Image (cartoon, rainbow, N blue to C red; front, top):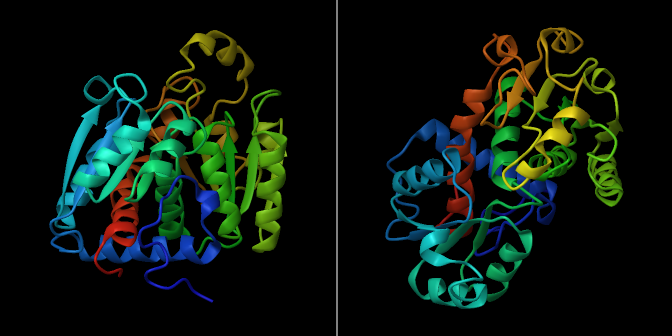
Length: 315
């Protein structure tokens, strides 16, 4: 069974876990179609996207803005200094006011609870552009990148080495829905919560994949098709940087670690990267690296999200 073209119409996207396997496939298929076609569509003609950002961003802000333009709409950027979510005025008021002005909201917040409150009170779709729990837009761009390289996601082994934070959780959820083999390696105390691990393992098994969690980077990377890492301390975690750097000693992606993966393996990082820390320069700049393909695919994945949630018609 495949998801109908209007399956996501008017819906929020706060977490990959809100989707089913058919809806992930619909998003990826739409993204591939829009990428092949390029710009010049009127799917979002006369539509407006509000970008509410508590955190700064390069890729997220620019890709959403360009996505709206290429689909015939436009975006308005609202920084925390301008809006003051939960400070200058309640989140509920911001949601209800913006619902009178715009057609879709993308919010990049420190707290996932802020997103939940926006979605609760908004009358238009709310998209998670990053929170402390999830980064669904990044995960969809990542799956799109892997699919382009391997033609299919089912059975592909993806090894994530690093912190069990927002990027890892959304990526694991997406991989599980796509029937991939997901392997994660983190030091003690830094993996995904047990309840999340169990949910991901169950979802993966239900879709013909599997999920395994290790404390050894070598065990996770062995025979992998994809090796993925992220920074060890994200925005908002700066106070724990020293402890994290010590804990993650031995988890850097080096050429020797990459050699344990398949010869055809690719290296992925959502950026920005701390070269010489979680990944070595010769890896991220090496022939196996697809990090800039990933970055480009943020645009195409978000075009699909916007088209399917807020467009007049789906592709």
